[in-house]
Length: 391
Image (cartoon, rainbow, N blue to C red; front, side, top):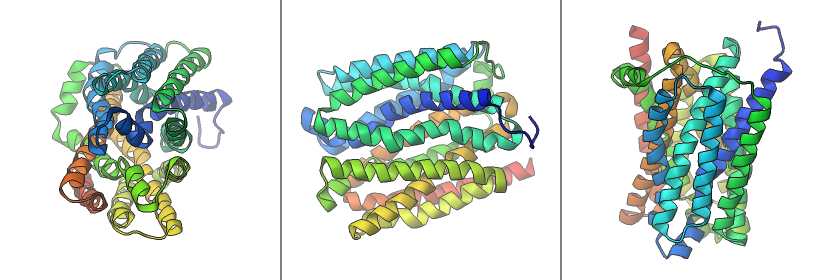
């Protein structure tokens, strides 16, 4: 496709289907941010313990995704997406019927294995379909399914949890995953193949310090983001006296920033390059995050700050994925799978650090702690870019 051609209808539809798959996974993965309080009350546990709902998912995903993507490297991508969504739905069903907190954690792990087959495969198909000059926007479109889940799915899950019960939110995820699987079977063509990677490719990437550092930037910055976002509903409940509708509204603001940030990240990546974008994002997170938690701002100011903080945080994924694909094009499936794993490494470490801050300081200090992690990310971006420049 030349630069003066408009993307075809089939190309746009394919990206939309991939985004829909990510929406189902995104809602199931991240809606626990708004479910922590209902789940904690149901099982009579504290908020820090309930935060393991995100950590259990994240840790399982981080280990399972790159291994499974490598083992299934020669399989039709359409079938892998369908299998991942089916397993994700099965785990969500187990979560909805969980009789104990341990059961719920195990069900979340099953969901993570399924999700680990969806998001990196969807990204690799997007890169395969997109012309080079539109790669950032294609990745932003597909990853946009996760951000729209932040806008609609996560607040909806929170509202359902407070109004009907947290179990009902997981039943909704079962239906969404099944619907997404049906749509992809109807729309996506068969025989979708990307570069054939295997366990040997995975081992070579892990053994390359330059590539490992580049991927590690994802883990660092998602740690910073999740350190705060996991406990935001709890913080705002206490600070502003929010209940069901207030928490839902706060998550809607967070999600609106996610959608705009993701789209902005894709477009700016195509214009100014991924490294410049990563530097801008790190600096903005360092500046904004402490204000988010330390100071009891008026409600309107807090909402505005939350929005721009979300825009900054969610602008990160398009430039990071584009950079990783550019560093090792022939290893794209494994690179994207490891990047997806790194997202959930950060999503697991962030709540753990946040829980430590809750127990040993206070919830207000999660912001400064996250800013410190973002500063480490800025250093990692600088070192990685210098390594790449030297070849």
